[in-house]
Length: 250
Image 1 (spheres, rainbow, N blue to C red):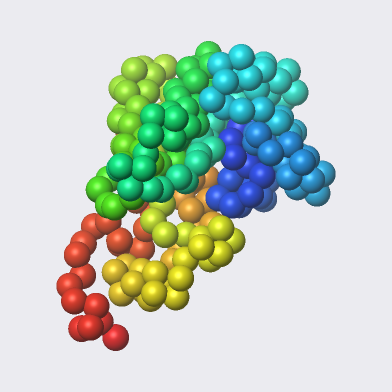
Image 2 (spheres, rainbow, N blue to C red):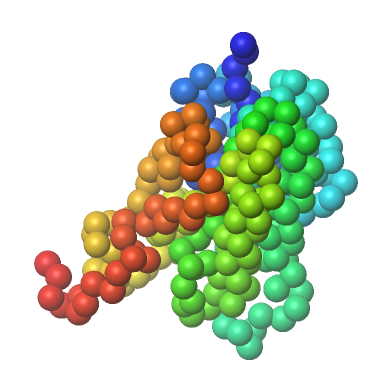
């Protein structure tokens, strides 16, 4: 039996790239998908065992090309990681319909389209789907009317796939990252925000891209063979508890 194949969207950077590298370390082949062709092809050149496909997951025709290309290249898809997303935050009054749709078409439509198109291949392999949502999909917070709603949709969509595809041996789970120390986050988070996260998160720190990747790859593996329909917050405890007054935490 040959190596297993994972398809990871939003694979050119961040959590998607970290997940790709961990799959490779564990002996998988990886189809890397991202709409940033230049960045994608640049990183894929450095990673043996990958096959880059530069397409937009919100486009139904592009999604057909992605799945066809993946199966043609590696013969099967054993895991689909729907990680591609846009983080667009803003007040409700400033979220016009175009902005709303821009978030939904990648964050929610893309997950639906990719999962639907990959269903036949996943049934054939008795594979796994892991969707990347956010703790913003588990609880409301300011400036996330579109983003948070899209991620809440991803959480429920995951459960729909688990319910319908379980009889075929296909598992579907959802990972909800909390604050993660990405280059983008560190570029836009002020010291006040960093300090506030320290106080609000029981583990007192941001997560790393690699820590989120470990959770994703576990859910795709045989170690999680009886786990489906689950929503796992990899967030340092952020979503699970209100930790009280920051002034009381040292």
